[in-house]
Image (tube, rainbow, N blue to C red):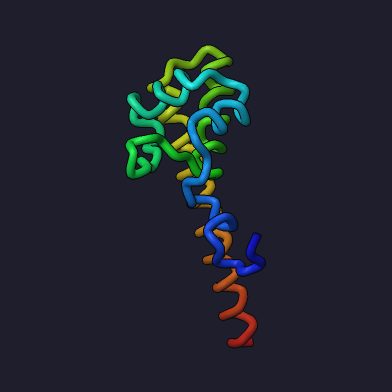
Length: 110
């Protein structure tokens, strides 16, 4: 394995896992992953042979959706909840960065 930080295996978005590997890691049936694909929740990469390949980032999304489904949410609601959680996390990060930039500006002006 390469120690290069840009190695594809270091990239959480690089599709390296087969459907069976992804299903095993998540503790689900392959049908669950197919339903996420057909429902538009995940868009796995396709190998030249047409086989689905999943990234670690996609598995994190699938795991979050699974928890919501287990809690009784329908797939469409789970998809919206995950997207809103991600949007909120992005907004919080942007606000934190803006606050830091303002503090830096204030300290330079003082």
